[in-house]
View 1 (cartoon, helix red, strand yellow):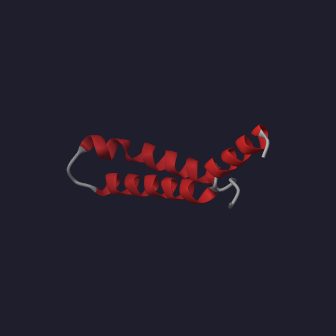
View 2 (tube, rainbow, N blue to C red):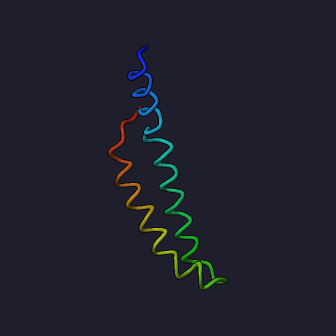
Length: 67
């Protein structure tokens, strides 16, 4: 493989949908847990931001290639 083809293949491997979708869903889940916990006002206050970033990330990642 040429140097550019190797870089392109590495870039495609880094931007596969599966792992990034899992990370975005984990972020959304963490935000939901933060929203429902009764202990920390700081966690509750930042839960919407975490859910928002997870949702935006999921929308962006859904356009990544499957493989």
